[in-house]
Image (cartoon, rainbow, N blue to C red):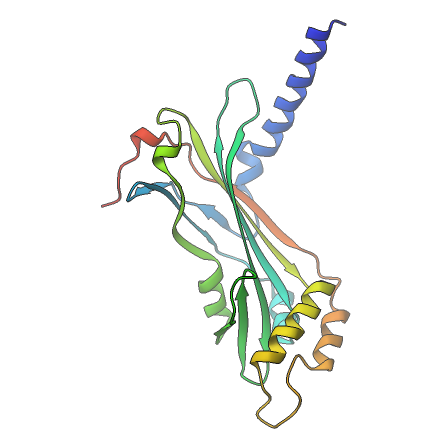
Length: 224
């Protein structure tokens, strides 16, 4: 077969792979209830809103309340559609949130990304869900930076990852500097909670992927 024929086969295989990965059904169904709203143009910026309706399972809720650390990660991408070729990723944004339940204060401690100096206290699973799993008008990219007549869409991936060895050490370190047992016990994550976390480390990741509607930057209207 000629080199031109080989090149055509390679492009065709990539196109099939892209169709499998980024077609509607692959994004649409997920048991976390992840959905992505149509993008909006706000003050010259392309923004997106998304939500996760069912982040927890009963087992995950139970183990979180017993002190198991978890990481919630979001990956948001802006893709440009291309005819006869796989779509092009033009922007990627990732955020991570470390979560652990503090039994002394009866609250969840949340640290978002490594740059946040102090963790936030969240009183309940419902409040934690509101904080982490509902994003309104996240700015992505200036509309002027995109091809005004190009066809784009936004993808969102959410991953809930219970426990890793890194999580245990990191959470122990930052809790030891922020949380104090009112009874006077040593600060930090108690050893028995570490044991519980290790015992339930068989819990697997929960992940979902969804995409929004195709949009053309020049046709977007500002929200009312």
